[in-house]
Image (cartoon, rainbow, N blue to C red):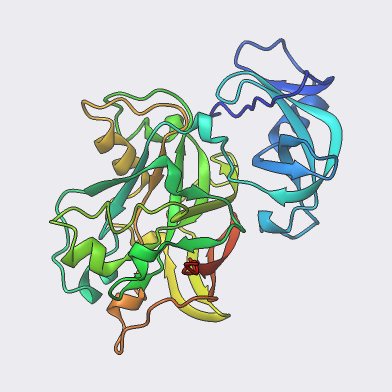
Length: 322
């Protein structure tokens, strides 16, 4: 079982359970309680405080974005933690990890064969790796800010992606062991500006994908105990309610095991590292005619068993000069 624990800026509360490999023996009812705590959220509660919690979802609902309440979680985010009996009302879901807990944001390009084909680029033999700054991360309902520089030229685009969250330090791990180092999965949107990515990027993609708030992700983190096979999940994008991407993680070129193993070869992955794993076909750049995001567009990216992030495109306005 991966480490799944959380720290908050509050005094510890009375714990209802603790996940730790060193924990004392537990009874069967307690064991069943432990297994149930598997959907990590970070949220602003109605009492005005920020917590980590275990999402409470209605029966039959798997979209964490519909969370209205959560059991407060305390402890070490990547070590021992407690899921308490305190239930808090969720006012707003935040990015699943506190920014202080995110070390590196890695991204893979052209990791679906159908996406490589639609962009008229060759299918990669090795992962195409680029990075986004931590400041690009945002929450599942935050606006997507479009600064003036990204309003130049054309090519504002969407990309739904399976997001891997690393749970413990990993160096030179084998594919067979790779999932042991994964905390869980989210869904994210690798927002991109094609002119700045391709025409003006000098061969590097990060500039056209790294503006502030251009990596919304969430709505929570679902552990590997719930998602045992991350390669059989539906993934999609809707823009203003219209489905524009409708794929499956079964079509990943480099799956989760291979990705974690390859990226850890000679490089240490740290707890809190985030990996965007690429997007399926259907992006605006690959359509005929091409479809670009506009001011006010509502973009939903979704992943089966995880949920949805719904973000509105907001163009920065020119300030009047007096």
